Image (cartoon, rainbow, N blue to C red; front, side, top):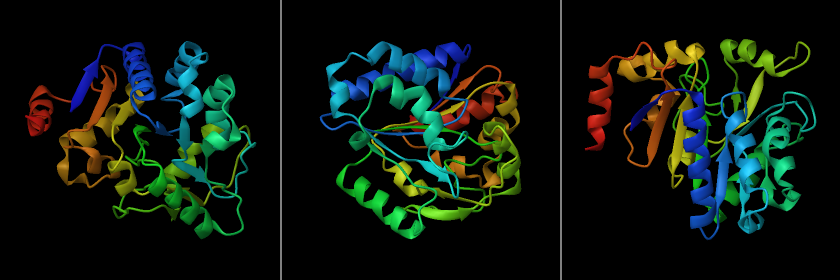
Length: 249
């Protein structure tokens, strides 16, 4: 279902509430979490509210994606962003985090390693952001719906937009990512779009079914909700919203 919230803080509060519920209500909580600016506030708030929760010892984190050729400690890596916002504040052990190594000599082995982990530890909660071109993870427009992780060529738009994460111009050509099919199999998925920057792509995803964007693969499933603030939803008309949400009735 597509849900419109008054502002980003209202979405943050709801995300944190769901993260806490899934931490407490699953015997083996496994989270798959997008990095980046959209979920940053949610992670910081979640860490602040749950850092003393005894259930944290049971939490496992599995990687969504990583830039190929970028080390984990490098400014702008997906691991570094999540470590700053979540892993470090929660003092998670290394054994609790199963993350792609973008500098591995054999990236196919990395894919197999993460796939095997998910096979043995099904994802209970996924939090996804949406790229400016509609990508999910690093599943770029035109990709297939794969049930395994893979190495991908980055689109030109992703290469440009991603520069904001780095403190200097950085060459990005490929990424390593979970497949859309793996994300779909998560027990619960939230897809978040906030701010006026996402208004154009939100309109394209929700009002143009023929766009064939990766994010559209996640529409129409009863265990997946799209959360938008009013700025991101500014160009979405009520008729389109009702039509999309009627799929859940």
